[in-house]
Length: 358
Ligand code: ADP
Ligand code: MG
Image 1 (cartoon, rainbow, N blue to C red):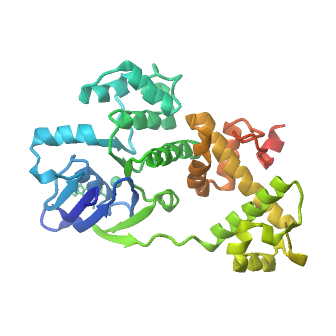
Image 2 (tube, helix red, strand yellow; image 1 turned 180 degrees about the vertical axis):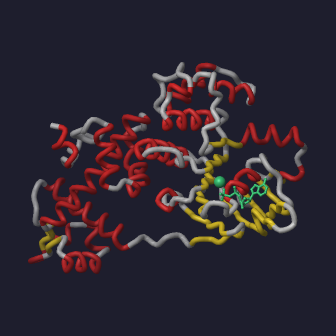
């Protein structure tokens, strides 16, 4: 039985407005699903109904074996407190309470007010030094991170996020998406609403809402350019490890399994394959430098901002880096103060922003 099972969900306002129309959806435990769709397509309605904040006109929802329609109001409230964590676009923080008090307020509802735990949750989202700030003394990104800490306080099985980065700048968007990627890795099930395809790409699966009707978007095939990017990095790393260029192509594991793509890359001029020796051309080198830089910066980002263990950096970086365009990468490099090495001690190629800062 799937973790979330939605059958024939309809939400009707008056006689003619259907916010949701016969929506069925199954989500497995530990899955990360993005619900996409334009404004007004019913995304928030779906999330609010799943979060027991709203009730459907018709249809059935089972979450973690519980049929929601069978729960009384009191049981629904308890179910919500124990199983669900919410992250909204509007932060919904209580303005006259400090960060730690806001998190503790959520604990209070979960009847486990524990200052140490609240502080720990805030530290986890990189706000250890902001515990006693009021929302008005925090930036938007910091407020959203308080919300993430608040959503985590009861170790929820299911995290519901409605446009979690809708009000954030790029660095904070990266921070919050990094937190979500991390939570997903830990096994939380995430249902995230977004209208932004770049954000949606981070999920494992995407579904689309259109005028209240749901369609599944097939899992995006690994795009050709993504594969090429990965292969360029593989060559770059092999050269770094060997300390020399022009390596025998058949020594590269990736070459053996992607010969056709390598031939294509040679034709397009990003690598050379002359005499069975593989090497990056100047343009391939530039591209690979950028990719390696982005990856190692992303690792440093997770390491410094979230204190992730070294063995988890690579995987988390892979998840967020497709979002990092060149300007975003420069902003994060600047945010991190132009680090020269990744947390594993490997050098980070220099970027334009590093040169300018010198
Ligand atoms: P989204 O989150 O995708 O922007 P919503 O779920 O908020 O969309 O809304 C879906 C549709 O339902 C919209 O057309 C909206 O106007 C309508 N709707 C939402 N709440 C109400 C309400 N209380 N009364 C009437 N219509 C509503
Ligand atoms: Mg909405």
